[in-house]
Structure formats: structure tokens, C-alpha cells
Length: 261
Image (cartoon, rainbow, N blue to C red):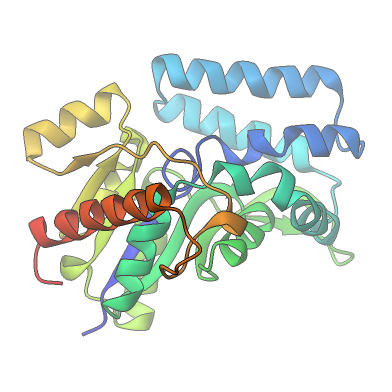
């Protein structure tokens, strides 16, 4: 039966919030003003300091709807595509990319799962070789402009619901599947798979992972996709090869610990 690996995006595959990372390009393009940009930064700081409970998740959803109303979906995706190299590319964790490739080699489907809008998540996914995504879907009108309604909110329980529905459609064995996240808000997603892994966990998720004996890993090496080394060759420096080998060994050990590969 088909198995899968589900990767949270923000601070798991990339080193910061994807929505916040693109805040500056959105501001420069006139999608919102300086005050909104400052509020986004403040909100991210509060999340890092105090985490996110259900009330904060609802507020984040409402703020997303208020902020995006009137934007055109194609313009957002195009802006993200155009600024990927500058904004997101240097933020991608090398360890995450190595694990993604390892799962692919083992025949598992790989998905990015994010509360960010799909117009942000999809280009990032294509950029790192993960075209399959589960993300927040905001409704649009007939002309393609966002309205203040959501088709799918991929945060907290919403992630687990979307993954469960996907598994039923695609015949995915969740007991044999993996989930990676940094946040306790993703507990519902992690609890429905057989192999949950805490990545750079904030305090509450670390506590849960320790109590449940889940693996805890630290991703620390953001890397540009252009500088990734797909296969060793004589032109690569010894230090780079050793670094790549070390990451690969860590990924392999993690997968071995959690079951057959």
C-alpha cells in the first residue's frame, strides 16, 4: 500500500514563516501598507514567544482573509514565483531536502502541508521538487479575486482532516506514513500517522514529543537550491561532500529508527 511523508512548511522545510517571508515583496508591490507589514512581524514574534492556541489560529485565519480580500490569485502566485530565488531559496533547510529525497527514493509520496495560501505554497513546492501540496484555499470570485471566505483552512485540525481525506482518495496507508512539524498546532496531523517527527520543536511540541517518545531533530543548515549537490563529483570541495554525507547519514538514521525503509 502507498505510504507518504507530510512536511509542514514554515520552520520545518524553510527557516521562517512563508507568508512573512514574502511580506516585503507584497508591500513593495502595493498589496498592503507598512502598518500591515509591521503587524505581520509582531504576530510572528508573538507566535515564536508564546506559541499558538485555538483562539490565535482563528484570529490568524480572520487576518488572512481580511488581508487578502481583493487580491488576484494569479498575481500573488506570479509575484511569489518571481521572488523565490531572492526570498525563499536561501531559507530552505538542507536536512529537509535530504529527507524529502530519501522518502522519494523509498517510493513514498511527499506533500507540503501548510496553513499559508496555496498561491504561496505551490510555487515553493515546485521550486524544491514537491509539487503535491495541502494548503489553505481562499475562495475567489468569477474574475479570480479573493473573497473573505475559505474553502479549506489547513491549520491545526484542518491539516489532519485534509490528510485523512487525501489518504482515503489516494489509498495512502497513514500508519506507515511520516509527518514532520515544529509546532504543537500540528499535533492532529502528527497523531494520525505512524511516524511523527518533531523538527526544531517549540517548547510545547518538544514536551509532547518527549512524553510520547517521538524523534526530535534539529534542522540548522539553510541552503540555496542552486548550490545543492545532487551527486558527488571531483569538483566539489571535501568539506561540502562531508557536510552532505553527514546530513544524509542523519536522515537515514532517523528513518531507520522509525521503521522499515
